[in-house]
Amino acid sequence: MADDDLATLGPATEPRTTPAPRPADGAGPPQPGPAEAAPEALPATGPAGRWLPRIVIAGLVLAALNLRPAITSLGALLEEVRDGLGMSGTVAGLLTSVPALCFAAFGFAAPRLARRWGPGAVVCAGMAAIAVGVVVRPYAGGTGGFLAASALALAGIAVSNVLMPVVIKSWFADRVGSMTGLYSMALALGTSLAAALTVPMTEALGGSWRTGLAVWGVLAAAAVLPWLVVVRRRRAAAVPATDSAAGAGEAPLRITSSPTAWALAVFFGLQATAAYITMGWMPQIFRDAGVSAGTAGVLLAVTMAMGVPLSFVLPRLASRMRHQGPIAVLLGLCGLAGYAGLWLAPAAGAWAWALLMGISNCAFPLALTMIGMRSTSSAGVVKLSAFAQSVGYLISIPGPLLVGTLYQHSGGWGLPIALMAGLMVPQIAVGVLAGRDRRIEDES
Image 1 (cartoon, rainbow, N blue to C red):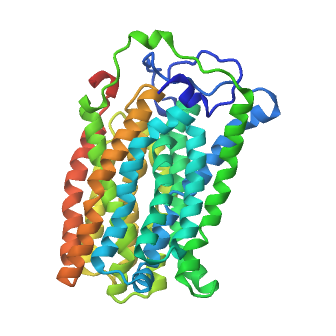
Image 2: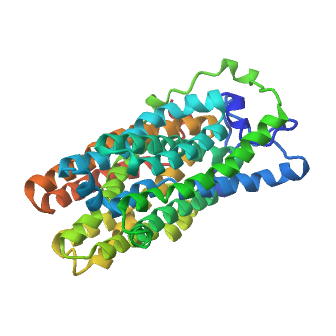
Image 3: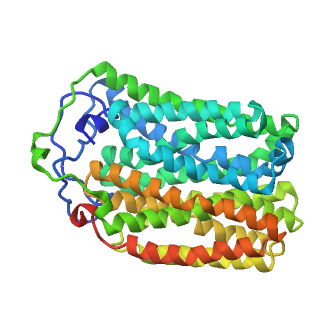
C-alpha cells in the first residue's frame, strides 16, 4: 500500500520516522521492514489527537463485536427462517456458504478500496453496510431478497476482516499479539452473545424471527461512530500524502510466490470451513438429537464463548513462540475429539462437545496472529491478510453447502460429521507449515 493508505487511520500532524516493527509484543530484536512499508500512526497533538489511539481501540472492539452476529444469529434461527422462506436443506446450505463467498469476493477488493479511500473510511463504510444489511434482510421479501441483503452485510464484514490486522500492525506494531488478542476476544464475545441472546430476544420481542434478526443492526450502527471520528480527524488535518522515494527501487512483493502465504491461506480456509459449518449447523445437530431450540442456541453460545478468554490469551502465547505449529496441532485434536462426540453421543455429551469445538475454533485468532507475524511491514500485512483471507474463504465455500446436501440426502449427521473430521487432518498439517518462523518478504 502507499504511505497514505495507512496514514488515513492515524492522527495527522508532522510525520516522524518510524522504528522498524518488532515481532509481536516486542519479543526479540526489531525486524527490518521493506522500503515500501506504510508508516506508523503519526504523533497526536491536542486533546482530540491524544485520545485518537483510544478511539481506534474502541473502534476495533466495536467492529469486532459486529463481525459475526449477522451469521450466528441466523444459525440460532435457521429452522424458523427456512420455514418462513420455504427453503430446502440444499438452499439453507447455500445460505451458510454465502459468508465465505462474500468474504472471498470482497476481501480481494479491500486493499484497493483502502488505497482509494483509506482503511478508516472503508471500515466505517463496512460497519454501515452491516447495519443496513442486517436490518433490511428479514423484510426484503423471499429468499432472493434475504440473500441480497445478507450479502450487503457480509461485504461490510469482509473488508473489515481484511483491514483489522492492518490497523493493528500500523497503530500497534510492538503489540501485535496483545491487540490481536483484544480484537479476537471481542469478536468471540459478539459471536457468543448473538448465539445466546437471539432466541430469547426473539421471544421477548414478540416471537417473530424477523425482529430477532433485525435487532442486531443497532449494535452495528453504534460501531460506525468511532470510525467517523477517526476519519473526520484525519481529513480535518489535511496533511498531504508522502510517498517513499526509497521504495522506488524495491522489487514488488509477489505474495503468490511465498509458500508460507499459501500455507496460511489453506489453513485459514480449512479453519473457516469448520467455523462456518459449526455456526450454521451445530444447533441443528443438537436439535435433531432431541435438544430444545433454546438449549441448542446456548450450546452454540458456549462454543463461541470459549473463544472469549482463549482468543485473548492464545495470540499473546503464539506471539512469544518461534513456531506456532504445536498450537495448531492441539486445536485440531480438540476438533477431532468434538466431532467424534457429536457422532457417537450428540445429546448425552453435548456440553463437552460444545467446549471442545469452542477450543478448536480458536484456530481463527491463531491464523490472525500468524498473519501479523509472517511479514515485517504493514504493507506486507495488508497483502498477506487479503491473500490469506480471500483465498481461504474461497476454499471454505463448498464445505457448508456439502454438509447441507449430505444432511438432506442421507437423512442423518453421520456423513456430514465424517466430512468435518476428515478436513481437520489437512488443517493440522498446513497449520504446522504456516507456523514456521518465516517472513513472506524473504520467500518472495
